[in-house]
Image (cartoon, rainbow, N blue to C red; front, top):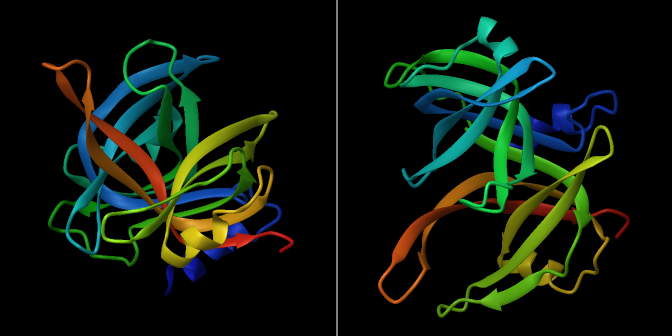
Length: 224
């Protein structure tokens, strides 16, 4: 199946809570779950999933899991698991790290086996978002004339909340979106990616940081 056909059963079910924000990942657990926070007596844990690209490179994606899902699957190191959930954002008020924290909020987890034993079950990294541009896309070209547009998409969530998801479009998609206005309703299909970069603190201090974003494979402007 294609990326879009695999995810569409969730994206177009009007009665599903997945209908505007769906993330489906399959990868290797690279960190044991550690306590993240607690809300109304329910504990949430954070783990990291290494998801392989076609190139062989891996994206390291944070996943937030409720303790209530541990009865179905408690992730352990080197487990291969499938996660279905939503790609969410949170503000970091600690004063350390990135200001915007991005994580896949797990709603379902399936254990597939240990690393090296589990079978490849198709596309391991899919995301669908239906949201609104909350600032003008930033269009640029690389030294090799590759066209890129950076996008910040606001995706509505229950209880009048929104998730703010950075996305990056390439080539024709980058050119198509560059002139769109704030508030434009977009549907985006793609994958979640992580990338390392260097931040210069001073002339003598450089730190490594990780950025997360959705790499866009297809987009549609609703009503266009």
